[in-house]
Image 1 (cartoon, rainbow, N blue to C red):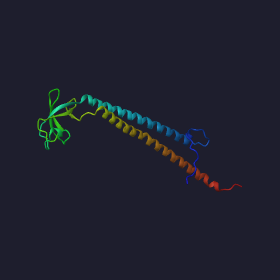
Image 2: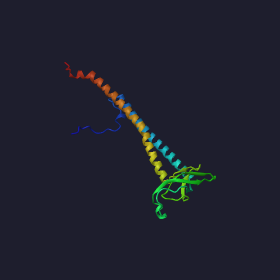
Image 3: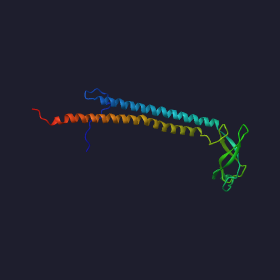
Image 4: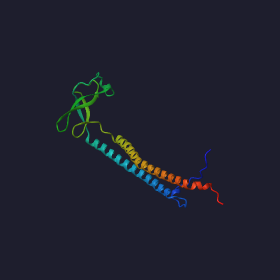
Length: 195
């Protein structure tokens, strides 16, 4: 059976009360500061990370371009008909391409298994002509930015929350130590009879 605790009184630490101790007021301020810092740190860090990721992915969509490359060596694996090659197995092989300034580049790209040398394949390059992955679409970028922003916000919010809970725990230990000292001093007097 549960003990009756009485009605819950909201904001009791902020009300005037002759029995309220200094430690109660300190704990109230620590809790308020903890929640405010947790909220502020989480929101600001999450928004900053979201904006940073979104801007970076938007820059990639603008700067990265598709280029037609040619397979330099026959790709490993059996050749497949064109109708099946789009959905079929893809393997890594060496490809070559030319960038806008006329310089030739080579690198590894995934192509349909069994592709012959000279087969055209679309690859994505950065402004320097280096191979990159296909840039994220606007909706993929929004999803990634939201996910990373949310995780960053939660991580940043954990720091002041843990620090505040540690401070509150320390205040609680100090209060319990003071109660123990008071009890050790006044407890023996309870057994006496006055006469």
